[in-house]
Image 1 (tube, helix red, strand yellow):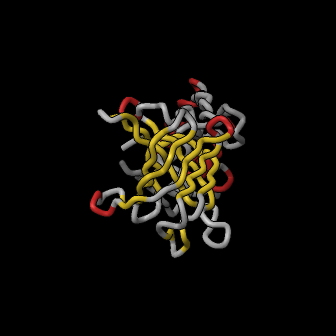
Image 2 (image 1 turned 60 degrees about the vertical axis):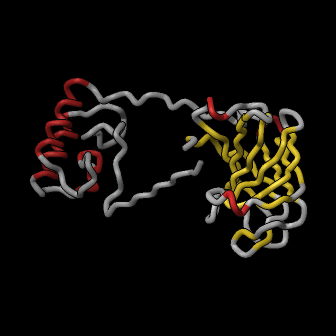
Image 3 (image 1 turned 135 degrees about the horizontal axis):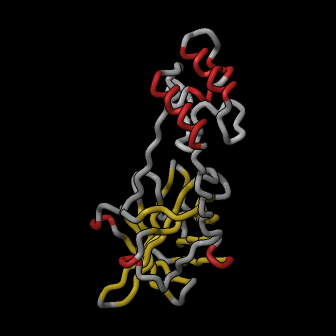
Length: 218
């Protein structure tokens, strides 16, 4: 299981799909004066910054299809953006969850060593159930991906017994320690005995991370 991240950039600022083409003043409607302004930009008689909303695709110009979209918005009204659904404030899962049935896992971000490193390390956890019972795994999302494995004691606590590279079972080695979900799912603590490996040259001593959201399980 791994996390896929993607980033993109462009020469011109990307426009939100919810932006109403031609709505120069952002009041949720397109007036005649704004249509005139968009046409003037299209004819190169006015600067784009006089009505940036006329440039729907953000390419630095106002085309015929964008003028048509502005007229349509003036006649039919601007599209209404749906109210975004806020994500959970805490991880809705714990060490009793069977993640083979869940489409998401919880991500936590924090520090793994008080003396070095930073507070930007991401760690997720999963629980897989086999014939011998549930196993809790904390995935350290920094290349190379590492897995810390524990045996749940209850819904919020687990005893760590092994660690290794996520994609190489041959690297699994025994280690002691503990994992704990704290503050109702808002914090994850992973505390292996000693510092069994290093992240960015800094020993992984004790991770304390705050919940940042749900990510898709892959």
